[in-house]
Image 1: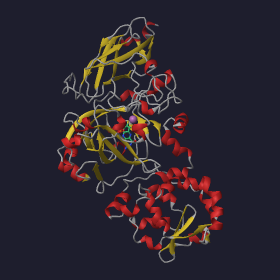
Image 2: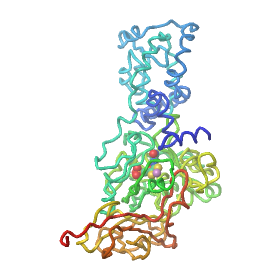
Image 3: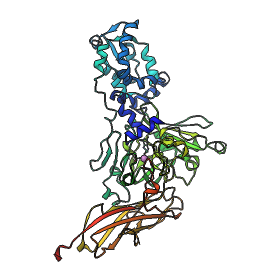
Image 4: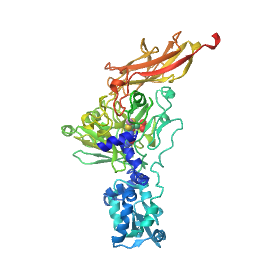
Length: 562
Ligand SMILES: Nc1nc2c(c(=O)[nH]1)N[C@H]1C(S)=C(S)[C@@H](COP(=O)(O)O)O[C@H]1N2
Ligand SMILES: [Mo]
């Protein structure tokens, strides 16, 4: 806990990224490349998964540890090892099947010539020949690393000369983010690695459906590359055993449902809360929210097919999701939702394979992501690899040690993550997208149009947005839109208002004012509304930031009258 707190202090992205950033860069690279990579899937396909499992628990501490701690120990190993000491030069001479294929790993030298032909990843292993294998494992390392090490140990032939090992430590590790997809340059980037970005604020409410390219992207880890042909979804925890589904099966065995749903990160509008008092987290503006159509199989249908029934309902309380993106420790991104939401016919939880009518793009969870409408972004697990029906919540960091709310008096020294429930349904939210903070309005225009979005969690429909142009003294009701169609005010089914409403209001400019404070606040159909200020809802992680949105604009003097 102490460590965790310290991490939070040091790094705005949170404790996990910090580990990665702080340890030697080689460790960072060794961490990831993902269980979903086609390599891994190949392991499964060829039945290698058993033999490749359990590999490098120690390895993960591995490369970095060698550099930081192991280097000076290596000299001792050199002396005591029964195996010969081999120079890098010698290793480098062994780069073909004819001369032998040697690699180094953590200061050991391995002759893997015989292994090449049975390597599940095929010829690719030859790229590592004559050199260190660590940088390649940073690309292809998988959850089953421990076992790889076991296999490797059978081929050990010597110890690398200590001084040559030292040289290796200066290797530029390959970047686990190097295969992240291209992104639109218009996005406002909050963090590059992992990639976190939001659209330019002014365009957010210009389209009821957020264009995919501009939809905010919130990744905790590198984007895993998944081969759709090799992709498998595992459904576990049910008495009938594991149900494994290919992408094709998900698409053809279950009816396709389409919903329009808004996704919001718990950290949306954190930057405003941060102005009240400093919080820890990515400095999101009000763009960590977007509205898209999602198509896929209903989670309910898949769970029923996997054997969910009244007997399971007796004990099952949560549905856990695991992503194919992995932390340095090998643990996958994960989260869970209450079972009731998952199996409810009206819950509309999707295993989505389409976003806005196209295959879900890499950044948003290709090929499958969970869409849990009405529920905080973090539970909408991308690159879904595994579903587990359980009596317990997900044990992942993101379920247990993050994404919870605390009282304003709790700080990093007193926070007890066990004391608060995980955020699920989000509170009511709204923001002004135009005009932008600080913009100058021409007095001769006489009228001012204010636009924005409004949404509430849990399927609660926004029934009203109140707007003030005088700092909250007087209020007017904005016009709500339920699509891009002019005047569309259709209501969704009760309790299933998953999508935001856009709103707009045109008001006369107050005659004397030189500056205006514009404010919006939304009301949902439970008559929940937003608090007026951030002080009383301030929390150490800057989550659930939904106080009235205030925008100050200036009014320029009318040129004609000068
Ligand atoms: N596998 C995985 N799923 C994930 C995440 C992640 O990092 N990995 N980020 C979560 C968070 S915190 C949010 S807000 C949403 C963001 O979804 P988006 O990038 O499609 O907007 O995805 C969630 N699902
Ligand atoms: Mo998030």
